[in-house]
Length: 237
Ligand code: PXP
Image 1 (cartoon, rainbow, N blue to C red):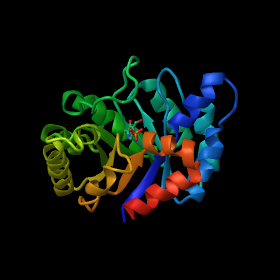
Image 2 (image 1 turned 135 degrees about the vertical axis):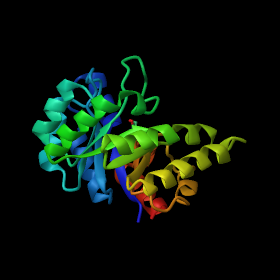
Image 3 (image 1 turned 30 degrees about the vertical axis):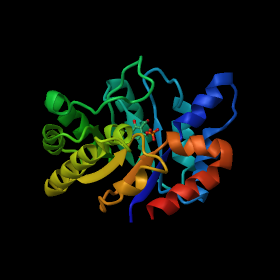
Image 4 (image 1 turned 60 degrees about the horizontal axis):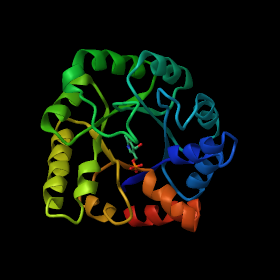
C-alpha cells in the first residue's frame, strides 16, 4: 500500500507569523499520526523560515512514526542531521527567494559531492532520498550517487493536471519510476499533490510514499487536520 507522509512546514509558517507558539507543529504532527499518516516531513531550511532547529529536535523525540528531514546538502545541516538522526533525509535544492522547493536537485551535475554527502548520512544510519525531476539523467545519477530512495518531483504533473499536457507529465513520472525501479531504487513522490490529482498518480502502484503538505494543511483550515489527513489517507489506500 502506498504510504502517506505529511509535510507540516505550513503549521510552523503560521506560528512564525506571530512569533509565538501557536499553532504548535509538535501537536500537529501528533494529530497527523493519530489520523493515520505514515511519516512526518519537516524541511529545515537554511533561512529557518518555518521549521526551527528546536522543532526538529523535539519532533525526533515525540514522533511515533518516522521523521523525514528535508534539507539542502550543506555542511551545517549535515551536522544537525547526524546529531538528530532522522529516519531519512531528503536532499532538495534550496534558493532563498523561492516560495517553495521549485525544482529537482541537479544530482548529475554534483555527483562526486553528493556521493560523499550521502555516504556520510548513510554512515550515520540515515536513509537518503534525492528529490529529483522525472528525468532519465537525474535518475541514473541518483543511483550512481548511492541514494536509497528518490522522490520524484510531481510539480509539473500537478501544474499540467486537467490540461492537454497532463498525460505527458504523467508519462514522464511513470518512465522515471520504472527506470528507478530497474536500478533498484525505492521511489517516493511529492509536490503539488492534492485531493484531485492524487488518484491518477496511484496508477503507478509501487510508489512507496507520497509526501503531501500544502493541500492537506489547506483543507485542514476548513475541516480540521485530523479529517484532512484521514481523507487523504483513504484516497490513497
Ligand atoms: N516533497 C518535497 C521534497 C518538497 O520540497 C515539498 C514541498 O515542501 C513537498 C514534498 C510537499 O509539497 P506540497 O506542499 O506541494 O504538497
